[in-house]
Length: 445
Image 1 (cartoon, rainbow, N blue to C red):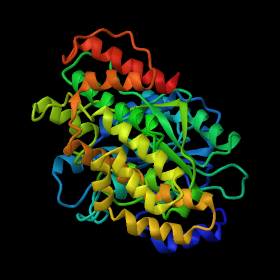
Image 2 (cartoon, rainbow, N blue to C red):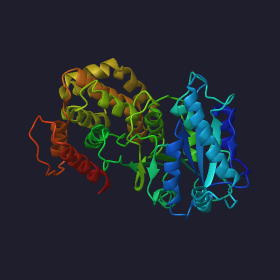
Image 3 (cartoon, rainbow, N blue to C red):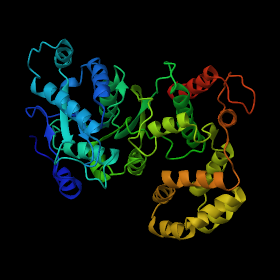
Image 4 (spheres, helix red, strand yellow):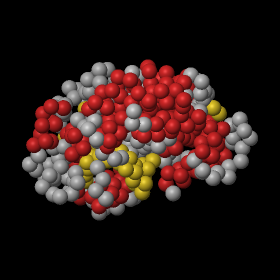
């Protein structure tokens, strides 16, 4: 084991969860560790590994793919059995790493020289605590345990990468991440993501609708010059060890752990986008988290609410004017006064958020203009931004037809879109797909 830097030891002593161990080839240490939570994902793990086998092998020898197979105590026997199959598969790949197996599929995986590790947070005595069981704590366990497995004697950046067991990745995935961090000297990143919209099944409409929702909000933040204009997809994010420790690691949230993790990182370092490393998330419905992709698909298919609605583009206009005012007005008393000129609802929201007290504290503690603006941005963070958009929605800026809203935002952002549609309508699926492709093209052009 490489000598662990003192700052890492301090973090582990204070914040890590000490119960779980890593099973892996302990003759090795790594520069990059991909942490993959998994619950009831045996079939999907096989699909993921099939895509990992196709990776460029340039950085495979110095990378560990670490699965966290997890469940709480009070869970169905079916899920426990599926998890045990996953554990047995991964343990087999670790144990037989140097063997010549008769099973051609397993042998091809072993021949790829991929380094696998597994954390058993599933079997009796190793389960997640019922109170915290969920994706946040599973990611945290994996990321914290990974800190003990890096080769700190090399000059390469030590990179923590988040993925999910129900995803696949493109061939350049690992190479693009490693080289972006090391050659461009970045500290944190989000990766390109694309749901599969080629298959024609019952979930296709749901996933197109959901991805448009995600990308529309991201576009709105870009338009509004928000500091927090980045995608928050848990399976498509990465950071270096130094900044992971700096922000006190991953949280234990059962959902939105990615949102809060990236928000916290963004208050410390710039979040870059790595657009040539692609994650393909699952398009299935799911019970695993209380909201997100799986729940959105499930809700769409159950027809429990109108999913073809988006935030009013005027809300992002308010947000844009507010961001400009916040960072350019030097007189703290005038900020609140001028906010009312932008929107009475904005003024009311700031009053509700106790902005007057906050800005006084910020102003008194900041010694330079750079510090002042930094503290302003940290106060009006991604969470308060989202709350403002919701407040405006509920107080005079109602949601609009999804495609009317996209059209209006495209105009504001000078995005040329040739898609034709009757105003107020929900277009045919092929037209919806064209809208989504236009949005993807904006981000990845």
